[in-house]
Length: 333
Image 1 (tube, rainbow, N blue to C red):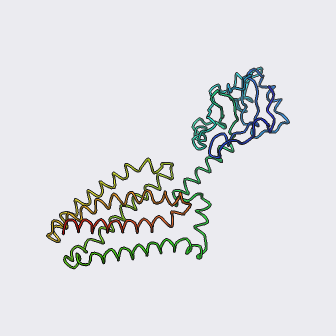
Image 2: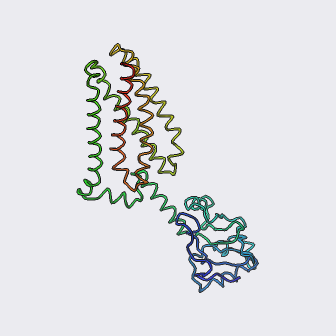
Image 3: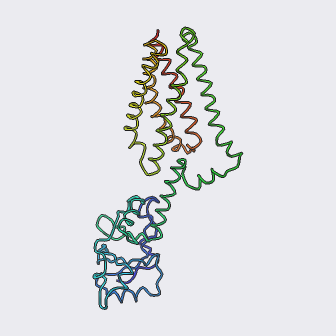
């Protein structure tokens, strides 16, 4: 079997979705049968141009992959050796729809300069050459850094955002802060709705700042952990249940601490219960908001680096205040 041409009409150089292994494979590589002498294969490769000649695909007559021979192994072969003698009979292979990152890491773990793509019948579809494996790893690395640094689409977006002009900085930030301001005004309106209750017992107002702060703090911790997880490929769905349970447990622990403190300060057991229940609810709700809001903004094509913080804060504040005054109204009526 002679080497495949540099471009094959039957097998285009790039196929499949961009994030799958087949997209990065090429058929323009040296291809021989296993019984071809190594010296003849090397001679046949002279004067031919390939996308990559780092490895030779060894195929049977049905074009099924039976092994891979690296150029290093071929040059080190003794006289008279055939490709079947120097090839790796169990080379690393992946299916056409294998995720590109998984495919690249499989080649790295095997310490091989290639990765073969085969179909369900082991028919050869192409090799992913070294430069494309490195390209995939670099792309995934940049994507992880982008997520870690602000959950942006690309590192280029992160860099441009970091060095953009003051006008663009204002354009990206002020709208979200205006939404936060509107949320703060809404909180003030909610407070006025409970004027009668506050006038009857001023101690109720003492704990509003603490409740709001704890809700924001719990949400900030969850948001940080969620972005860290996304940066290493851990999706929101994988952490949602455990993080929500963690938020509930944090709320229970903080509520248990607040109960005796509020009782000592006010002497009002019902107010203590209202504060504790609010903290439990706020911890859980803030955790959910902090997980899903960055994901939602990203899906909508917005930059969570600017929007997630202000929106999460205003939502957590509003919900915490609603929970608190709902609990106060129910328990101190």
